[in-house]
Structure formats: structure tokens, C-alpha cells
Length: 208
Image (tube, rainbow, N blue to C red; front, side):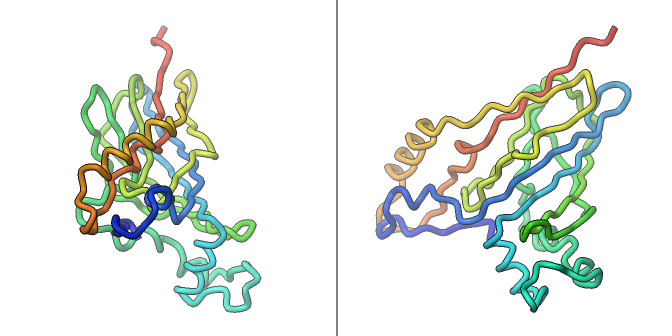
């Protein structure tokens, strides 16, 4: 699911940059008294078609009413955190002073089916890192999954998050450059997701 192999010779150019799964996100950051980020809670709300496929694949909700029993929810919890390929970072990247900040493996927190869509929340921890100047990017490198921070980025005052939307023209240009570099008779995963990522920057007022 995380790596999309594309046939460059047969697929039209617009399709190469089209995601197949859509996820709405909400990010809550945990800060200590020194305004260091020590952890996070991340909610993923899957699109309705992906939800349907997941429930069918797991044999859940056989009557199709999107009302899962407690036992079914227990089976669903953490479904998206089990099979992580080696080196997979959860499509979430933290940077401070130009250096990537490692995140610990996620722990499932809650799961529900709301308005026909799976809403799964997990938590992650990290070495305490200053919130001031933190950059956060959420994206699938292959752009198979499109993430949107529609739920926002939340953290304690006085720190705030500024979200900058991606530049679609720059993404299109990046796609053209990728196509120029890959032989037309070869399969190759395009690493375009970063060009469609929202750029989150954290700022905090200076302590009094």
C-alpha cells in the first residue's frame, strides 16, 4: 500500500501524480514546561472507499451499516500500524535546525467509524525537541496516499502552528523532471509526495 509501482510507458502523465487514497489528519503536539515537543497524537480519517475496502478485507461490518460492535472495533484497532516496512517513517517527518528528528514507533490509541469513515488515532514519542522552529511534513513519498491536515495542528499556547499549502505548479515541474530522468521502458516509483505536502512551522513567544 505504501509503494506504488508505475508503468511510465503506458500511463498518462496526469495519472502518475494522482493519489489513490485520501486521509484527513489532525495533529496534537505534547509539550513539556520548557516548550519541548515530547510526543504527539495523530488521527487519520480514511476516505469512505478506502474504509469500505479495509472493512471488507478484514471481514468486518458484514451488514454494511457502518456500525461496528465493540469486538469488531477491538479487531480494527491498530490495523494500520502492524505492517510497517523497514525504514518506513509513518509518512510523518519532523525537522529542527535542518536535522531530522526521529520518532518512536506509533502506539494505537483509539478507533471508530464515523460517517462511514474509519478514524484511527495513534501516539508517538520523541526525544524532547524545542517547539520553536520545528518543521513538520506529512506525506507519502510515492504520493499513493494524499494527506490533508483538515483537522489542524494543535499545541499549547503561546506556541502556534502555521501551515503553508503546497505549490501545485512546483509539483508539476517536479513530476516533469522525474519523467525526464527515468527510461520510458522501466517501472519506477516516483518520489513526488514531498511536493504535495503541507509545510507546518511552529513558533513560540519568548519566555517572559
